[in-house]
Length: 211
Image (cartoon, rainbow, N blue to C red):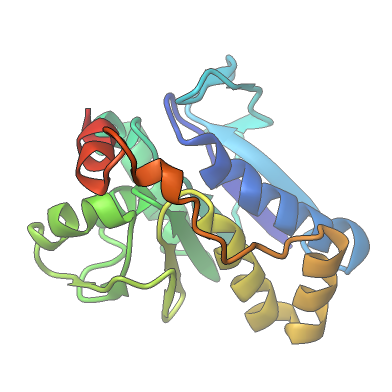
């Protein structure tokens, strides 16, 4: 079982690392994927949206056929949707994978690759309307959405929930529960209201996210 994680400049760190941790935990302790790859167009380190540098394991030409592929989102998707090599790689792998997963605005890459036409999908809340304008997809405001072999998630931290839901679907709820317990992922329902004071309103965050 091989699981590929797509890399590109200015991807959102937690979009990638959250699912990597869950999938990696599954693989290491509960008979999940035996091989996980960070895959990029080229081999030099990839610099993410907030400065994290990640070394790819393989480039597109070296990547074996994948059983599963995860596409993160972030600022970089706005340029990568026009990267023909990346879109071709996602389309070719995605059409052969057992499942393709995206987090946040990774959905836009799946759209350009032709993988979500006519499907029910989601993305980061600030980009839902932008996704709707593309047409040919049913856009819903949910944290995790499965439509056939396509899985999409809302923004950033939602990738962790996506990975756990995916593990539950493939390996059973007991395995997903063990991964959740082992990683001690029990998000609080506390809303930090200070985030909405002063300039930090949802409208401000939306503008900031699209800048």
